[in-house]
Image (tube, rainbow, N blue to C red; front, side, top):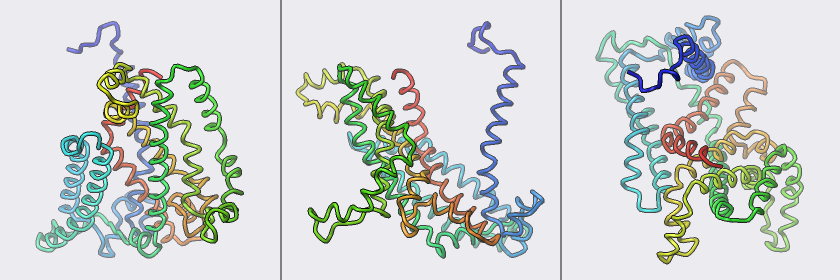
Length: 386
């Protein structure tokens, strides 16, 4: 029997309607990702076939000698299942057990990078090698039944040097997240513990700047970045750099865009932490910063991780700022992919563009899988009081 009071129980029609709407929404949201993922592993003839079954099973790709056998599919799905399960259950426990006190962020960074490297090596190197040895000796079970090729990913990452765009995206996102969280935690804590109304009006003014179109901020910063060598020459001499076209310029603009939101969000999380914790730490002899570092921050990780994820998404998915401030050689992944689609291309180039688009979704899924508990905890905690 359900514990829900009878008066609050939904009728069957409402439950079916809600479930149907949710399932339909999930289908609409997931279908594009699934479809471009399938297309990226097919030969151009199959990827743009009018028959959906040809896109899924890839007969032309299979006839070319590239495909998955039944054994490949079963073992591959099992590998993915246990990888996801490990990331969502066992990995957080390992980080909690092996991270020294106050070093949770370092522990999560090391764990996430290590997990990503291990997954790539296991799924794309070790697993294909083992299956390549098993398939020839299994007879019909080793024959391809679904066409699949990784040639488009090899072309994107090796021939087109997409790893340079990935490196630039990594520099920008790490820089934005690091600066935003460092400033945001200190400012959010100070404003949350301030008894002055001035703190509230500072946040309101900050949100006004957050609401400005990104192009306005870029236009204001652009002359400074273009003339940065002349501006800095009296201080740095001939070694003064030109910031225009460099990732550091993008980091500065994205931090200025994101910082008000980061401070506001972290302030809400800090307000949910009782003041008694600060008072107890002060009684025990801690300074204000020591109380913040050793007492408040350990209980703030869900909020920090949630806020850091939003900062990551802003920097990772940005198109306008990066396309305006970076030259062609220093582009991040999102503008580079837009360049794929905007130029005159063959069907092979278009499938490579799809493969590049699929590639940038992998880090997002990885982050959500690893930090899903902290994200849910942080969102619910931030929604209680603000």
